[in-house]
Length: 426
Length: 153
Image (cartoon, rainbow over all chains, first blue to last red; front, side):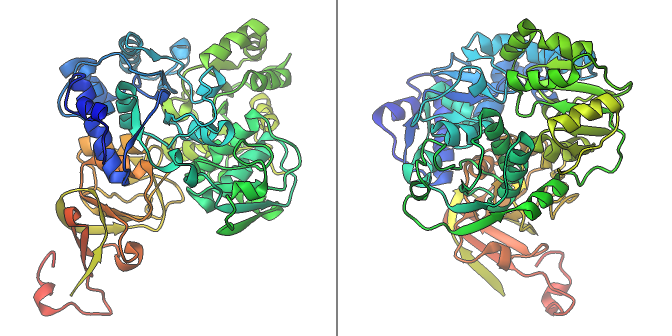
């Protein structure tokens, strides 16, 4: 891989050991990819504060310096952790301290996380603590080179914003934060951003559940290729695209898609493909929608729902308001819990607007910083979950062994109020 | 008789081991148990099976950006594969292979998923991009006498 003189100096240790170790990882990673060079980035979204039992051991042995060196730089040498060189934000983290009283997550690990927040906050890591940084101010501009983790944020960044990022990992974002560099490969190259598969949508894709089903179906087929969606009726907004991308990057590895006339790099169907022919056409109709629905609901048989989870990816304020309206003046079924997840900055807006009170008066909770798939924390005794998120319904049965129902927001709130699942395809 | 495939180094090194092969892409976070190397994704071909200490032959990575961290943690837990052979290059699988620190190759001149079967003995010389496969004797095809008494050919 070719390094500039300035990059070579960083590699050789002119900017300190941490930067040198970061460059070492970026070079190994770039060589593995077959990248020819690095590219400058000034927008990093990664994860440094999440605790784990192994991180606890490392911190006891050599402080956050040791844990960061191993887990964020893949370095056996423990280095001092300098301030972030470029804009860096923390994505979703393990626990929400504001809701610690509601679950039995490890207190020891929660303390480790709070200590990590202080350590990395003092080094310039913005503690946004959400899987949706684009909802709370990190909105890169079209063409901006980014180094983001979080598959649902990556696909949003590339497709909806037209910024350029690959799906980075814990180690590459750690290294990018200290260097402002990332391998110039994949979605950083304009030629790699054209569509590959045409999705011929033959039914009306309308509400959030529809968009989740479409994403789940398409992702499983195209895997990590670039679908181009053709033929829907109602123009989507942020919430629907947030759900579509999260679903497509869970059943497959979709990091970019185009919607001609809607997303910024696809003014027309032809331009979405860069003048090339699609490698395949995928038909999406009632049958395909049903397949996606049945796959998402294949883990569940028990209609008695203990726990309803909304907000994966983290809810917008409008989504909280929508659920609040359904809950207004009612009360949750005895024995069924409702958790809604949103970035802490938006929680503040929900509090101020009175939505939190409506949800809490009904017996539900609004939580920040995490989600059950990440925290591995659910209400004690939970066996059956209902969620409006295809992503959560994909991962929860594997991660937690829970039966998981997927449906609309109305189906989920209905289950929270009655304790029974009565969702279905309508 | 060895079948030899030629490709490109992803992570250098030389290693040999028994293959575990899947035609399904693998999720890291949410797809494997990093403490045991076991695949946990419900509808995955390998669900319940561990790749620990095996040569993992797979199409590539999918899912969460936690891919590299989960394979990184598998290395720290002693549950990493012994080597990796994959088809489709992505940032997830590249970074994952780098931090797993095991010999890894891709861009092979034959489809490794078609040539290699679970149980085959696979030698990787990643520095030269070479994969040598010794097919596991099958019931239909009795093993040559000189292999029949060895654990590994």
